[in-house]
Length: 277
Image (cartoon, helix red, strand yellow):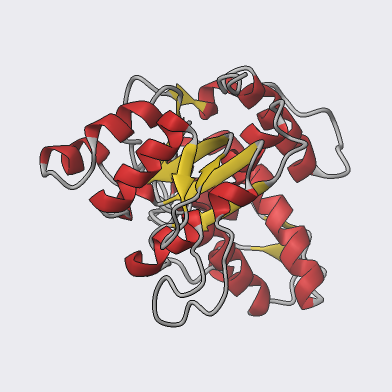
């Protein structure tokens, strides 16, 4: 499974939704950020190593592929992976076996990989920095996660969820935003997606004691009234969750986030490919 979207669009949440809605939900789910780990150590994180395999390897280490047997491994930012590690990932997916770093024992494993990236993998392939065979192996099911600026109907739900969450953390009694503030939030482009929205709401809560947030509560440079930011053209060939999860929430749900997550999980379960037998 390949998840494609901008930074901050919630790829980790989508990966867990796919896992929770599949027949592998009872198995382990582990995530690893390929951009956050030095490439020299990434192979050990994924496949493990034997004692003495390299300086500092004072004992055997079991890698993520071995730990995720019969489960799901989420590889975030796979576009940052080196070609050598890509080759070993491809072999593990095709042959369902690998060796630990510094070892000769062949270990068999049954792992479903969900990969995510905000990079242009086709461009990386053209530049010789990403293996085309691994790309097509992952691309069997592609899910496009639209940016926040294309999910206008999600914004009020996310705002209310984060107000409750951060209000509880900060001891604030703020329970909503004024219609004028919501209109301006809708017009903002949100280049940082959900992470930027979280930051904006938390800053606003810190700086106010009002039960309602107004346009003046926000430190982000909201566009002037009447200014419209058109959404970018949509890419094709991938599932678009914004169009697929459209039904109205039931009136007065106790937990909007839980309700939305449940609906998203049900939608993803119909789109994720079945795990190998």
